[in-house]
Each structure stands twice: as structure tokens, then as C-alpha cells.
Amino acid sequence: MKRRSLTWLFLSLLAALLAALLLLHAPGAVQGPLEVSAPAKEPGRAGNLTVILVAGDSRLPQAVPIPSSWRDIEPERCEPTEEDWAFVRDAATDLSEEEKTRFVTEIRKIFAGESALPREEQDVLKRRLGYYLVEATGGAGTPP
Image (tube, rainbow, N blue to C red; front, side, top):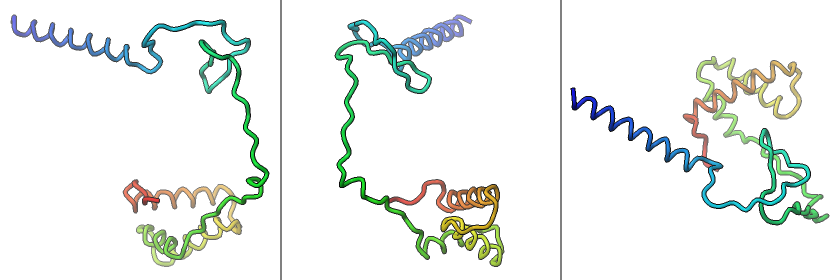
């Protein structure tokens, strides 16, 4: 009986110590003395958090102009290769050969912007494509 109560006491103290350590090292926990200055007139918003400048310079960072030569750069569009489409075809293991052909053909049309299907059906096919890719790669994807 005495041994059991000592074990419970030890475990309780260990739990309290662990909780104290977690609180001290929690994100946002104060680690040292703070200099508190007057808060900004209007605090900024970041998601659900209110950001108030506490110490230091209260000036906001200035925007950096984008060089005009950068504005003419077109974003690179990655087009799937025939090997990619063959991989998608092989990944659709639950479809017959005819269904695989229709699936890949329709997905290619969707990516080319030429599909006549309603948006909802396109979304269903894209989700199915995502499922096949995750299943085929084990969720790890392929390295870039």
C-alpha cells in the first residue's frame, strides 16, 4: 500500500513538472524582461491575432518597388508529359482499360481548359486524380 501511494505521488510530481516545463516553453511565453512602449494607434491584424508593437521602432516597413523588367516575365506552366499521363493511367487500378482511357482523356481536357463537363463533375474527376496519385506514391509524392 505504501509503495502504491509513493508511486502515485512520484507520478503526480512528474506530471506537474512536465506541465510547468510545457508552460515555460510554450510559444508566446515570456522568456525575459520586456520593454513596454506605447502601443501603436491601430494594432495590426494577423489572422485571429492582434499584433501590437511593443518595443523598438514603430515605423512600418516600406514597400520595395518591383523592377519593370520583372513585370514582363510570364509564369512557367508545367505541362504533364506522356510519361505522366501513363503514370496516371497505371495508377487508376480500379478502372477497366476503357474507363482508364476515358478518365485520362477527360483529365487532359480539364487541364487544357477544353472540358465540356460541368464544374462539379470536373472537381470530382480532379479529386479522383488526386486520390490515385496519393495511392500510387504512398502519399510521399516524387522528389522535385
